[in-house]
Length: 175
Image (cartoon, rainbow, N blue to C red; front, side, top):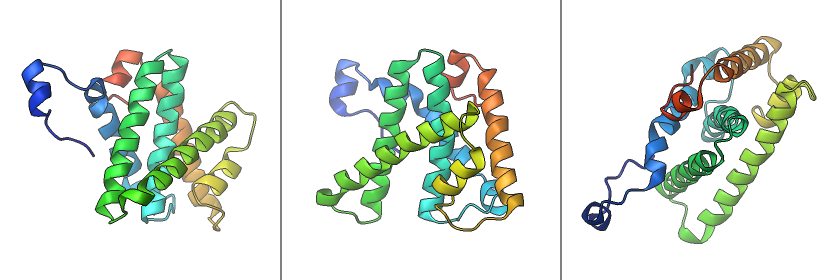
């Protein structure tokens, strides 16, 4: 995660990156996606891909809720924080400059696809269990109990997000 202090020029001229105001929200999204219950009770693979998929599931819900609240610019900034974080993570893993862009493109594409899948499932237009099997478990076998745990927890989060004001969410409150 990017928690670097402002550059010398930013401090000198008093300008800060507007995305910085969304760091508390982004940090909570990441923390929620890393909660052990997803990996223990929900049997989400405790791998780089599994953690990515779980963080994306939480991020997708937050972005959908911000969209409902008309927080378009904040959604863009939140997505940019995600991209910045993933870029840093890839570089820490030793992925070089030449390939990072391709990886980021696939990650953003995955986020977009999951937003569509989860939106349809939460609206009752598609089956949530199928969306989770495809996007979170990537087609690997998963027990009904684990799937029910993840689906129930995500639906509960969606309900809580629906009760929050825009300002509360932007401050990092996920209910």
